[in-house]
Amino acid sequence: MQLTDDEKAMRDGRDGRAVARAMDLLTRYGEALGAERLVETRNVTGTVTATTPFMRDFAEQRGGMDAVFSEFSLDSDEVVEIPRVKTFTSHLQLGFDPNEPERMGVSEETVTFYRKSEAFAGRMGVQLMNTCTPYQVGNVPTRGEHCAWMESSAVIYCNGVLGARTNTEGRESVGAAMLTSRIPYWGYHLDENRLGTHRIELDVPVESTADWGMLGYYVGEVVQDKVPVVDGVRAVPNLQRLKHFGAAAASSGGVEMYHLVGITPEANTFEQAIGKRRAVPTLRYGAAERRAVYERLNANGNRTEVDYVMLGCPHYTIEQIWEASVLLEGRRVHENCELWIFTPRAIKTLADQNGYTKIIEDAGGHIFSDSCSAMSRAVPKDTRVVAMDSAKQAHYLPAILGVEAWFGSTADCIDAACSGRWDGRLA
Image (cartoon, rainbow, N blue to C red; front, top):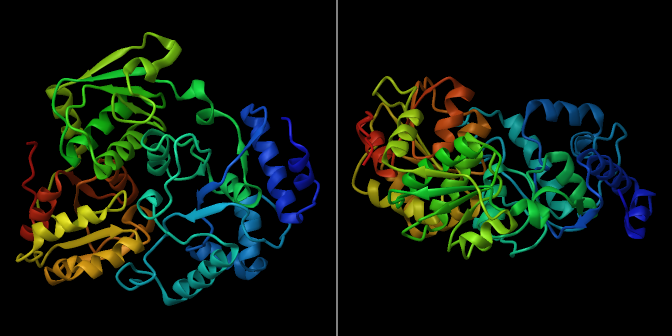
């Protein structure tokens, strides 16, 4: 892999030992990937803070957060002093909401350590957005911008919707990118890898957020880690629909990049989306496929008594919180059920200001920030059956927590929260 003079100087210690370790990691990483060079990035999204007892103990035994970053973000056995980041960096979601430790089953000792680690990240210059949807709260890269992002649902939104360029990175590679403003030039940074590989023709309208989640789940299953081109969209989807589509496609498969003909930045036409390929396999999504996806997402739901309704995977938009408040106003969450809604901290503040939080809390629901049940492994006590409007979460949560899951629309989920029973059905 060819390094520029500036990159060689970073590797050789000009900017300190931490940056040298970061360049060493990126060089080894790039060579393993077959990358010919590094590319400059001015936009990194990753994880720095520590929210687990394991990392707390590691920090106490090895030398604080410098030791945690050295080991888990730079692959360095040597503890090096961590400097400020060189490029704009935003922080992803955490293991819990630090403002709701008791409800999420987190000890005060863990919260105290987390506060220290968050302060460490802040001193590094990391933007503490604490969300899986950084594009909702200020991190919106432009078309063609090279990024280094973690989090599958964020990566697919970055590539597909925004037209920026990133692969699905890990804690180590983004940690190194923070300190060097470099990332290996491979994968979806290259024009040829962004071209469509499969055509998905729609035979049914795809309109609601749940519809888009089901379509994404189907697409991920049939193309796996390839680049789908969806043709025949009749109504332009908004942010939340694209958010749920991408999250589902990245969960049932490994989709990191997609095109919607006439909608996404690199697909003004079908021909533009596939480029030099000229011909690609065609798959059709119709009523039968839609029904089959809905049944798969609800395959492990047996008991109709719902203990817990989880909304906000990926984190809810302000529009979704508003919608939930409208559906809840004047109603009451059932005494045998809990309703938890997850959103970025900045959007939670806006929901407070707009009065949506009060409506939801007056009904017996709760709004959390910074995390979700998949990240925190936190659910209400004795939860056996969960209802949700996220195809991604319906895919993951049963495996993570051993619960039964029901998938449906937001209205279905609010109804379940208020009745304590699942009565959702495919519209």
